[in-house]
Image: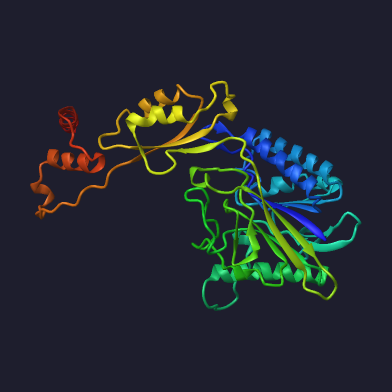
Amino acid sequence: MIRILHTADWHLGATLQGWSREAEHRRALAQIVDIARSREVDAIVVAGDIFDNLNPSAEAQRLLFETLKELRAARPHAVIALIAGNHDPAGRLEAPRALFDLIGVVAVGTIGKRGGEIDPKVHLAPLSDSSGRVGAHLLLAPYPRDVDLPLAKGEIEGSQIVWRAREFYRELIAVARREAGDSPLVVTGHLHVAGAVESEGAERRILVGGEHAVPFDVFPEEIAYVALGHLHRPQSIGRESIRYSGSLFPLSKTEIDYDHGVTIVSIESETGLTPRIAIEHVALSRATPCLRVPSRGALPLCEVEAAFAGLGIDAATAVDERPFVHLCVALDGPAAGLRAEIDAIAEKFPIRLVSLAVERPCASERSEVVSLLRLAERAPVDLFREAFEREHRAAPSEDHVALFHAAAMEE
């Protein structure tokens, strides 16, 4: 039996409103090392977005190398495989390849070719159990850039980008099959598969051609398991064996309720028989709380201080362990000065306020018929009053009107 730990979307070097996430990364990665050891895995696959940006800091790179060292010590025989995601510097990820070869780490940032064809030595790795028996093969496909996708030579039906992505994987799988024969094949991918749940505002739509998703049947049923990266919610799509492992912890407020973790994949195979696959989600404990206040809806401004006090955070909590708080306030009037007022309240408590959202009551529908007037027939101050009330759900004060007239005089 071959056992694989599938993880992705580490985003090393990420920050949240200027706050470092390094302490959270260190705790989450330490848990992954412990899981790799306790589950006796034969491979660790990181399916892209290892770094948060294309120019990772020295600290982010150091953390990656320290983690690889710890994983190697925990599982001396295991294959450790990294692929580039859309956030990663593909060339920089491959640069230490000569050193990685010494410690059994495989890093693929770009499509490697030899003689114009895909090089299986770059993209294919045998997976062995602790006795040395090869029980599966790993096909490493990084984030597909436009230059990596085959071009259609004639007219095709349907989406060109879907056709190109399908051909991309068809070519890779054909190369793998020539080398690996009937061995169970595990394939990586860093892309958006249609039907999967995105994290609103947190994940780029990354495929070329104006489209951002491919159907799950891009991956043929013969594939034992597809280890995906890019989307941060742990989920399977299309069939159980096509799976996003998800990120290590919430990277935005839309991810607070996710069950972050890693995926353990067990593959049992016998010659001539369909391999048996078992898939298990293993949750990671969250080192730093990420809270929405309130958990649903919005709070009146007068209740914010009591809500912060009700979190019960110990005043002695170290700064890098204080919870990240996303606050939503209900407001009827103008928001001028709101942020400063909220910041002053937050400073009294051992929290890190990282976002402030404002909810306003829906404007009531007007029953009167509004007559249509030409713009030239409207007084500018009346337009100002209407725009102010539409934006702030309250009429402007005399001071606001005076400021408007003063600004108009300067024109």
